[in-house]
Figure (cartoon, rainbow, N blue to C red):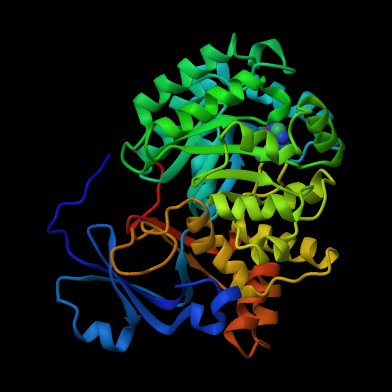
Length: 440
Ligand code: GUN
Ligand code: ZN
């Protein structure tokens, strides 16, 4: 992995800079910092200054390397809080609801990753696809196979990305080739992977029980114990995605108040725990989520694709729950957080809610970083943050250019970008200041 020397020349990137210092839902316009002609100054991979170009250029040493992106938007790299790298190859598989979709598409795709060569190829394609879409931080499921964990961490490490991943734990109601031989074996494999990868470079490990329907109570218990045992570990799972699944989970665990309570009883609800979907839950669950500091991943393309239901963002915000956006590929249909925002807007409209552009881009950047407790490292351009950023062309397509020519405010332009934009808008993605490129 290439490391910059401590005395490398400064990098200064000029363009229209937009980033968030707070949640626009709470702080309104003050949450957004906008420099129409801005400069982002990067030293040794971290943000040294961010502000108006006229002011900062004057103070820049002559040795600085200035990259001119005027006419383009510069935003913090996007954060995808929920995705399955091993399902990349079955994205857009036709016509099933969750349990059938898992059996027919997801599980066979995941079974292929027992082969380390397949796992490495999938992991590399996935990381490059994230970067091509402007995503620099992600939390992903691997598969049940330890080699799939090695493959994704190695691919992210080679690209210097921030990545959280974990071996899928399943010891019941799943195919033999994905089932842990026992809860103890799943735990032992998880511990070995933590030892190998957790807290190395920009990587962190997530204990990953797939969901309550594929883990025994013993496995959930072991996962809870491990999650609290080692500092900085994450926990990722699915909660209340579909109505049938939610009913079934309550039947399987009759002692629990509801689906969410299954996880709470296993001590799986705490800071750095992130649950995808959270559609069929109530306000008592949301209150407990917020009190515990756990986070939800809002995955609109997946929720619409599988017909799962509508995320209640207003209720999550009312209760002060941390929320990030997830693409949830392969049930989700795009790696683009821009496309995900467009679907988020539409899903919320179906629920009588809305999503302003500022709130949308907050969720895709600082909101996601906060959901993952990574906001001291990434998510905005505060001094000292890791310089992960995306350069977006707001005129990338004829339709965007046509629409934006009529936009009068930043809000309107951002809204057009979020509704009409996709990976065609991504001019460049930078990781720790440097342009992302496949490793040599
Ligand atoms: N619930 C349990 N596993 C999965 C998965 O792989 N994808 C989705 N969308 N939901 C799940
Ligand atoms: Zn998922």
